[in-house]
Structure formats: structure tokens, C-alpha cells
Length: 246
DNA sequence: GATGTCAAGGCGTCCA
DNA sequence: TGGACGCCTTGACATC
Image (cartoon, rainbow, N blue to C red; front, top):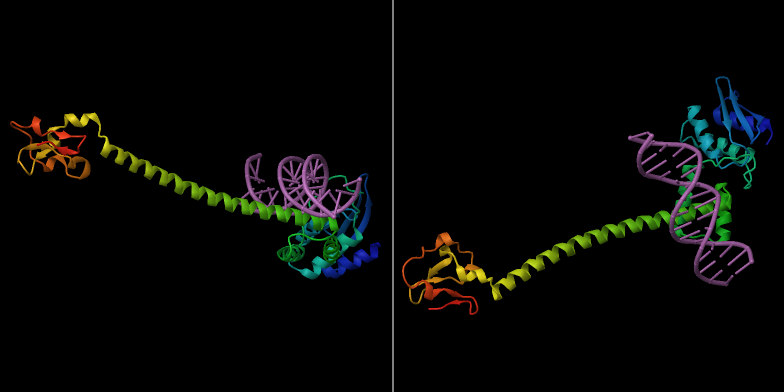
């Protein structure tokens, strides 16, 4: 693009005639310098992926409205047509970060909602519409699919985590229940040497006896009469029949 | 300066 | 065999 055209484009976008672009040869690139009385900003070389990024920076430094679409279009036009660089990295040795504009991202998102993949024809059309290279559109869709997959993986992971916690708790509960059931059928041998507090009065003979209820009720030793006197040994609780032997 | 985000590079795999 | 794709990584930039 001719210098006058660039100046015109910037003049339109900035509402001022004070901004100009001047060709500035450099060893590594054909860079351009945006000149204005108090400002000298370098813009990326032809077709550099960094052009949109730099344009955004230019807008910030010129205190332009970030959502000024007219200014954006004009500046972006300068960057994408006047300073457009080919794929072969000509004029730009270092890799620069490209930031897609809000409009570009929004349109790409819309298309992604419709189809998460593109055929070559759709890709070319979209690239043309967005003023991007087909490769850039392709890369955007690849990265977008990757992000979607990552998000889904995170959701699945969270779900599995909760499921694992629930199962662990259920497992603990079942273990406790199993131990209780085992203790009913096969009490510990220590049960033969029951403390006095674990004894009670046999309802039929009214003698002191070991109470099977100790394992089936919540009765505490404090509720029961104290053991004393003869007959105690004859009424010990039989762990194998679960009953007191009268 | 640590960290997150995201476009892009590199490489392997699949398939027409 | 070349193109499309996925996955992982890199590097620039933004944010805190």
C-alpha cells in the first residue's frame, strides 16, 4: 500500500491528519513506523500475525475507544492489507502473539456452535470473511476443540470424584455393619468374663444372669442391678446360644 | 515474577 | 501419500 493510502486510512480512523506511516527498513523486517507529533509507534511488517496485536496496542496508546469499530476497522485494514505478511515468515523473525478481535472471535464462536469442524470450502470462506488466513481459522478450530475437550474432561473428573467419595462412604458403612453382624454371631471370648455391670436379673428365675441384651440393646451397666450373691456363675451368658443359662 | 491464556509449531496417527 | 486431525509444547502477552 502506498504511504498516502495508509495515512488516509489512519486519518479517517483517528479523525486527524497528524498520523502517518513511514517505511522503515530494518535488518530483520520491513517495519513501518506510525508517526505523530508526540508518538512514534512501530507497526509489524507485512502480513505479520502480530499486526492485530500491535493495532490494539496502537489504539491503547492513542487512547482510542477500545470498542470503536470504525477505528478498529481502519487500523485493522492498515495492518491486514498494507502490512500484510505472507506465511513464510518474511520480514518477521520472531514469533509474535496474534490476538483475534472481538468480532473475529464472536463469528468463529458462532460457527463453532454450528459445526465443530470445517470442510476446506467453509474454512476458506470463513477465512475470507474474517480477513484471516485459512490456516489461522483451522488452528482456531483445533484449539477450540481442544478447549471443549478439556472442559468436558474436567466435568467428568469432578463427577468421578464425587462418585468415588460416595462409594468410599458406603464402603465404610458396610464394613461397620459387617463387623456388628459378626460380633452378634461370634462374640469375643472376653464375653465369658463379663463385668458385673453387664449382668442382669433373669426374668424367669429372678436370679442374677449375664444379659444377652448387652449386644442387642443400648442398656448400660448403670441401669442394671449390681451383681452379688450365689448363683452368679450358673447364670453366665452363653455366647453360643445367645442366651442366659438358667 | 508467578501464573493463566491462547495462537501457533511440531509430530504422530488415521484415512481416502 | 498428502491432508486433516489430535495432542503436546512453545512463546508472547495479560493479569495479579
